[in-house]
Length: 202
Image (cartoon, rainbow, N blue to C red; front, side, top):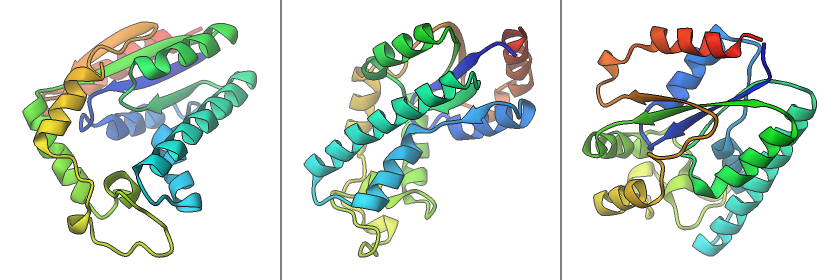
């Protein structure tokens, strides 16, 4: 297998986690690295009292992510990572992949934004969603709110603003495959897996 970093990019609510699992099942030698998991671990470990503290932990989480990414590159491990990547991460990812001579494949998931907002609402209220994403203040041992009581849920205007100003739908690094997932039932995931298989061959 060619040394590869697969980036599952694109808008929130496009099924990146689902696709990551499909790819990992098909190519079990790939490892998975998630920026969101880094954030959630730090929120659980340290907690935050306001958005400023939350932002500091997010910055720390990205530092942790890049350190772990480099450690895996040093071991020549191919991996997959999912996030609504943007220009904020592009330079760091480019430098690391060039330094360690990694192929990058970006699978960019796009869809109708109104459809995605409805998916995002459902996801934020799901009990499996980490509360740190939707609260202004969070401490693992003391936060007992239900998801419906969360005080930092994203409304429609903010969701559309993030999607149209942060470059989620334009991000690309290396080889680009774009997939429209407005209707999941129409997505040819088998064809996508075949394309990925070709790219992974040494």
